[in-house]
Length: 92
Image (cartoon, rainbow, N blue to C red; front, side, top):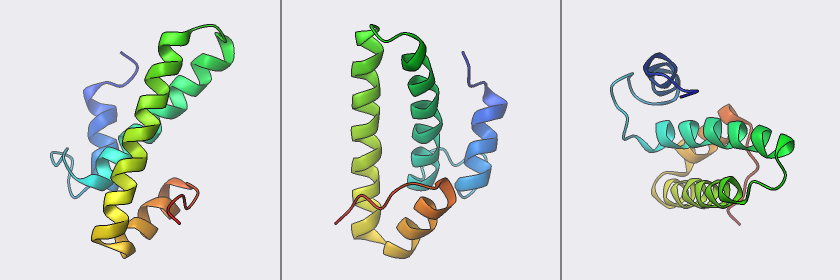
């Protein structure tokens, strides 16, 4: 798989509370963002891979739901993660 244990631990250490805290909202959003970037690159090469396209749409929906949760729960953490990951502010 393209993301090994070390890569995931690095993502969680950078954006989560620690390398072993895999359930934090910020860590999950960062992991989803990495996976979304990978799937987007794959779809640029393989335009007719519709199962990957569906997976990408589901992943974007999950990330959006987590960001909406974070926006309601703690807006400062929300602003910090979208700034760190260079995401658009999607919650209006």
